Image (cartoon, rainbow, N blue to C red; front, side, top):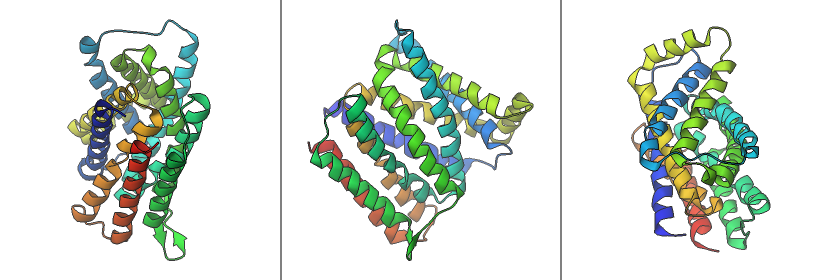
Length: 285
């Protein structure tokens, strides 16, 4: 994996970290989480669109890709709602530590559909990530389970499909175009799912958080763009593990800054094991 791919994956990790901390520390409680997510995706689309003059306009010639693209939009729209919900309703570290479980499906499906090579070290890296997640969530003889963690777990399944589609078809677009259209459509889907008087609900959400809703959307778009550019430099099964180092950042921030001290050493140990798994996936073949 070249240095550009590593830098872009680490940039994606930073933006993944920053938007989660913004959500956790700056936002006032929403009246409607679906409407708020639609608002965030709208600001993400505007942010991505601002990069189009720099990188140009490119759309796919193959109309069959449109259907695949729309499937990815639906997955992402629901996933965006779930991850925002999880970030608001679960321990900051816990909601983040579950996300690498999607590496299992990314690894297997990337091998099947994208023909990316599968190796013993990749499997070992995924196993380390799973072990780190289990250690973090362990409490006595059971695991910590709440509605936020369940939402994060379901998000992991949905984002696997989005990652594979992004990796498979995004090179047919100018990447800012891909991201901007993606988030505009995602915002539209979420607006429909909001129910009666969706625009009024979205306006209400903007009045509650104003600048911060735009800030989360901008961070979200920058995460998406850096990850898409990283895909253009390396295999999805290697980019994603490096991006997952945001979990260590989130864990340390939640323990030492947000004072979420329950299972402190488990969280730190788990995040380090996850990071080790990411390094195995990234640097060993």
